[in-house]
Length: 253
Image (cartoon, rainbow, N blue to C red; front, side, top):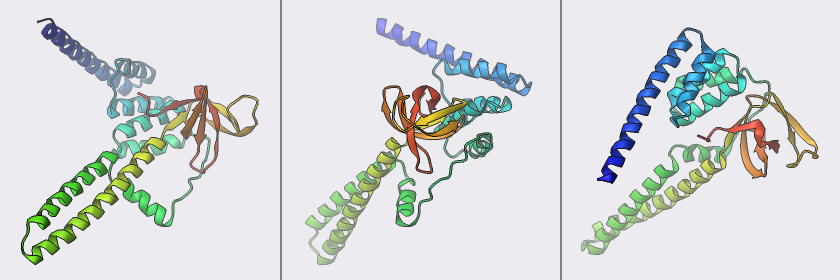
């Protein structure tokens, strides 16, 4: 009985929180449409404090910051919205506008040849998608081996054997791409610079030499952490160490 009452209490709390958030979201949108962007931001952030995350919420929050020319928050929240809804064209278009607000112009090293092809194929499915495909080929292989084993006629045995070998080959390819996509996802740890200007060091300490400077709104990829320092890599291949206080990780929710 106590457990049942506890479940009812939790469900009631969830419903109340959801209702409150719906009211806050509506109020925030009304404030935004009235041009009261700072007040709208307060309402959107109040929803975030209840641990609710959605692409629509981050998109609207980014729009409000954009209206106030807040460079770093604009890029940051658009990127978070895109992370939750990577196919949304409106988010992609607005990220383009937001990046025009940034100071740093960083080139991207283009991929060419075979590596470009492999990377493109790897991204066609998620790591889980490739894993599911590997399971499918495994099932096919087992079924075809059984068909080969129990078949009496020569032709069905040959067809089953060839098909089983193709399934085994497909299984190997799917596993390779699954691990490749997993490694790609784990190595991708993007962040946005929030400091108006920050020095990127050659080593993780204040006494080291300056490698280069970055400004608010610039997107970086975090590849290592030592204490309060983050090693970052830019799309042009440059690396360096930046204070953890000067950036915010996009994948942090």
